[in-house]
Length: 331
Ligand code: AQP
Image 1 (tube, rainbow, N blue to C red):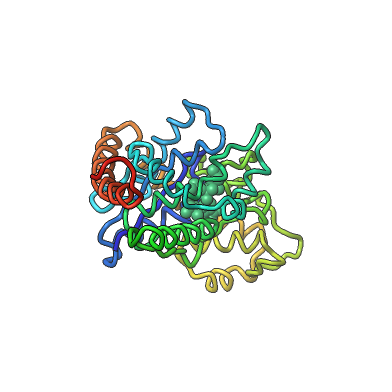
Image 2: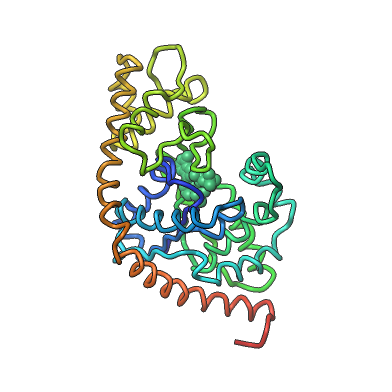
């Protein structure tokens, strides 16, 4: 089976991106069901909202180094930058022409991000899911590991693929979502009703993988909780504590049930201390490897190989799509 997934270089990669996505990719590398893996840097998606040029370039490189530092192995997984494979944008356009505006307007991420834009909403923010569909359908992927927040986009990808197949004949494989059992949605530390996001203007809401360890610990210790003083998993009434239980569970590999039992008689202060230590233990080795990789030649080598492989696969699929639609001359 083949899988693909990507992350936008739209800021500093957070603990949410790591626990909901990257940590899962690393596990899947050793799952014998997966014989081919593609992980990319979704830079075309990042420009749906304004990005500063130098910051974007820095974030792209940083994300590749973090993929490697978190344990993605270029021997097992092809890593590439989306904009270096132009087929994504080309297929994205074809799929956009087979997607209805009403479908795009229903996407909750579009509605949320639209509200946050102060200086105008780009049409790319609306059409983003058609490009995401192209990212996946180009490679005949069997499944896409994502956090819960991307489930709706993946369902739209399946609808777009089925519609295209109906209209033009069998072209795309219909992919399945692959959502981790735990960590699928890590919440903001400043507002546990909101998802932890790398573009959150309030840095207290997220832990970046490259945050100074003491800063990261401090953010956990000042995470918003409640005044009820009992530690139990209750998303509705205790979202802050539930989020910290999830973070501890994902970082240490302890089940949620065992984590709850372990801390049921703790004070909030001791519990937060333990969560902060667990996060620090997860971040420290990643940061050490990151510092070894960020200025090495490995990044370009990995990206060149990943790009070439992605282009090889994408070319075949795009030719098929153009022939089915009747674009250009027969290829
Ligand atoms: N809080 C989260 N908990 C679990 N998983 C998460 N993901 C994102 N946030 C969480 C998963 O990370 C992957 C990459 O996401 P993305 O960068 O493509 O877009 P996003 O979902 O919009 O992530 P952010 O951090 O919220 O980015 P911005 O702030 O730029 O919008 C996906 O698999 C996602 O599910």
